[in-house]
Length: 163
Image 1 (tube, helix red, strand yellow):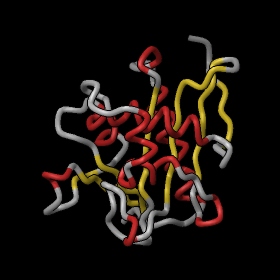
Image 2 (cartoon, helix red, strand yellow; image 1 turned 180 degrees about the vertical axis):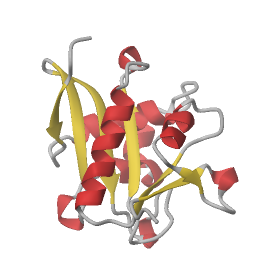
Image 3 (tube, one colour; image 1 turned 120 degrees about the vertical axis):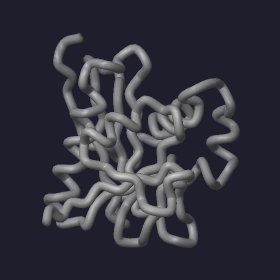
């Protein structure tokens, strides 16, 4: 793979967000459909990118093809995602196309999101990752730790504040 290029995620990327959300949900087996992503509120929230509430993200591209995506959403408590910890800590989602995994792209996208969170002076980033998902190791290497009492839910937190 040649070096990917990166661009900022925009609100016009809803199709890509749907594709990435579906792939993340089906990480271990086909369990859901695009219709589920569109109609189930617990899934559809991940396809709504709203920069005015503070959401941000980055898309990795190989030529004109989208091969990876990291997006960070400020989901409010009344519409909390699976990785919700507080209104002040946005939830991170990461997707890398299956043909591009194992080449460092996920780590690069994750580092970009962490750098942006630090630049925005955010307290941290949260996420949810199911047991058995190999991405958990990537998150741990990037400094994410399990949230005490929420281990069974797969909730992890990265703190931007270094003590």
